[in-house]
Length: 231
Image 1: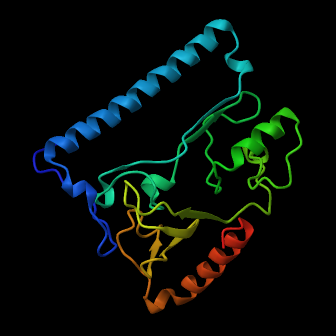
Image 2 (image 1 turned 90 degrees about the vertical axis):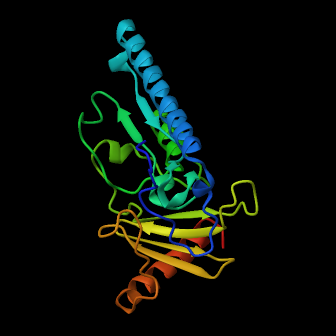
Image 3 (image 1 turned 90 degrees about the horizontal axis):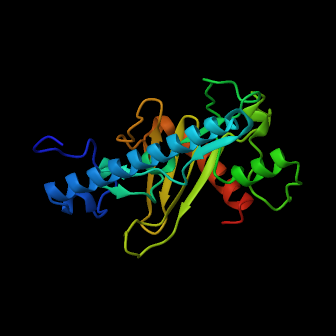
């Protein structure tokens, strides 16, 4: 990191503890160095696995899923770790290699969740997916045929507060354009236009021009809470 380095953008919620600012410059360097070392190590292990599959002649006979259970803050919004609904921790990698099924080099921007993985593996194995399971199989999407009734939004809820990480309780909804966040014990709301503001710097909640968007997202938030029995 260059001398005097600062996080690329601050936290937007007034009064929230800014943990990353409590680090010394050396702490920040060590933290990022450790994170990148871990990432490099994991990349090397994936490479070893791929090499072993290739040498055994099983590479093209193997379905490979590479994914994570959460993203990670590296100083963005003056934070580190995960737990937030902000993009840095909400979004995760998902890479699939399946010769003959998944077209190499293709990308998909449908909204998927780690809730979908179990259903996907069961579907691939030809095992019945139980009705009480909350995700959906990704197999149609992997084949390039997104169902017409595929989800248009995703629900998030973090409730472990007070705790060691001191991330305020919040829930929210994200669709392909907007994200609405409610810090329900603080009475605070945030609305972000992810197309115009991908770093989530400009809170649009309270802006009259977005009143219909807020109303629609609040209705969707309630719908998803009822669906996941988290009302």
